[in-house]
Image (tube, rainbow, N blue to C red; front, side, top):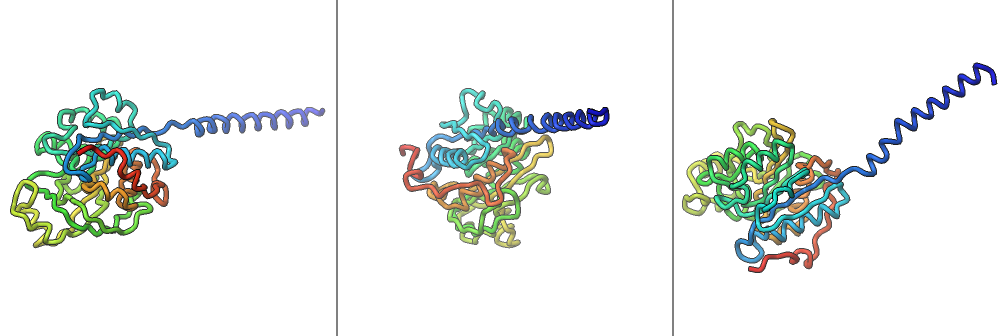
Length: 303
C-alpha cells in the first residue's frame, strides 16, 4: 500500500468512527427517554351522583393519557391533598379536580403549590378547583395559574356554552362544540391578562344572570360586563408564567361527569394536561377513544 493509500484508508476509518460515535448515543437516549410524570389530585366526594365526580373524572383522564401513546405516566391521588408530598417529586404536571373555596385541597399548601410552579411543574385546575378565597389564596392562584374564581366577582350558573376554541396548541384536533355545564365566568385574571391566553370563550345568555346578587350568583360588575357591554367571557385559559418555565391552565367546566364522554370537551382538557407537562400535543390532539358506558361509570363515588 502506498503512503497515499494508507492515509486515505486511515481517514475513511476515522470518519466512520466519528459517525458511529456521533450517532450511537442518540439512539439509546431516544429509546430510553423518561416518561413525563403527571399527578392528578382528586378531591373528596361532593354533590349528588353524577356531579363533581372528582375521583372518577381524574381516573378516566389519567387512563386516557396513559393509553394515548404519549411519553407520560399519569397517577391519581384521591381524597384531596396527599399526606406524603413525595408523590409530587419529579412531576411535570399536577392537575387538581376538587371542590374549592376555603376547603380547596391546596389552601393549606399554597407554599408547596408555588414551589412546584417555581420548579417548572405545570399546574392545572378543573371546575370548582379554580376557586379559592381572596387574599393569599387568590394572589397565589394569580401567580401560579393566571386567574381564579373570586367570590362577589365571578359567577357559577348552568348554561349552554357555544365554543370555537382559540388557535393554540391546546386546541389541536378540537372542533366547535356546544356543552351544557356549570361554566363559571367573569374570572379574576392577572393585570392586563399578562401571560394568559383565552382558550374557550362565549357570551353567556342573560338567563345566566337571572339569580339575585350573591357571592356566586351575581354582582353589579358582572351584570355590567355581560348585559350592558356584551363582553365575551373566558371559561378556559392557558397561562405561561414569566417567573420560571411553568405552564398552567384553568378549566371551569366539569360539573357533570357525563360531559367527559364528549370528545371535544374531554379532548381539550387532555391536550391542556399534556401542554402544561411540556409534552408536544399531536397535530390531531391527544389520542382519545370515546369512553364506553362501563368506563364512564367506573370509579364513581358512592353517594
